[in-house]
Image (tube, rainbow over all chains, first blue to last red; front, side):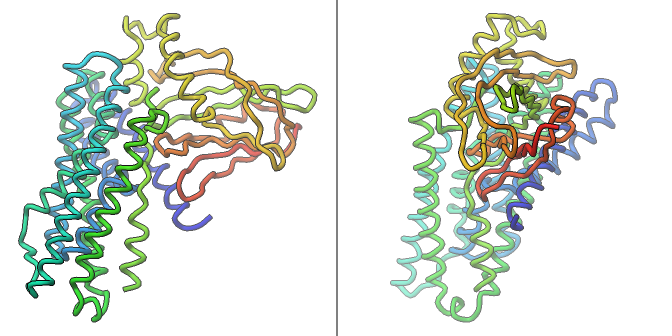
Length: 258
Length: 179
């Protein structure tokens, strides 16, 4: 077994244990009060951190974005947390819409809305990639430095990834509602997203660090990195679109909702 | 440059990760050194259970009535079939086809976890057979432990193995022989 497979098994086992612990402590909140609430929030943070360490949650997009644009560690942290905030808001919003407004099976409706949001996300990712590519080509043509202070693209990246609701956040909110602790559910979702933001930021920081160590060739030909990163983002969006469109039109390929 | 490429390659794996955890309790039913069916219990994690209870236990009596079970069955069986019951059975070098699913029951245990119990009708030789539990979409993590298997299969000599191919992960029950 190689290192990656062993690492993935470990991540899954940690999530399995954290998922069980957080649920058990949520169950005990009504008896144990504030101390149990603090433990729930602490575990939610770690759960978010470990959960985002698995594949997904926009780490690939953040990496490609920093490959294309470069940027400081501070910027990586900002982008990571922007994504996690939108991610949590999206999950909370969809959960409340399905729970309080729409009727029908919760798991199925949530999954259907998730699939639609994934399509929107993929289209937005492609758009961000095209925008970055055009900007890089224009800057090269005009022999200008790319404007790294452009915040519009950062918000676009954050929204394009974050719009997909995290079912992990949805589960914790619903579980809290079922035990009569709605506000704890909202707090746990926010704290969980802070944990996810930490891991997503780390992806940006590591890409920045790896880019800075990439040698003199890429430093002098920086526009190549900008274009390459933008192309990767476009390909990522196309790939996500193709797998999610398949799930939308042939439900057996979508995530199961029992 | 090398460090950058390695980092990006390890970061671009795009498949989903588990949001649902299911403990698997398998019992192999044996006749003349051959398995005639596999009885399975799927025990959902507490959070997923609460969503399932919210969806299906409409009268909130903590019991799935016949009508409620029928709705679960209607929604679940189709998914089971499409995903080959999330189970791959190997006998020597060939894979065994699962004939059908029987005796589906849904219940809620004392700790509030939802349990699906059912039998999968199939026929295979026990010696050196393998039951692999995994979800290709990596949305569900199937957990298999010795303590789940042992009390149900006292006449079996078995091992547990990890299943992985870089894209999906699960566990396998490797049957050495009947004791």
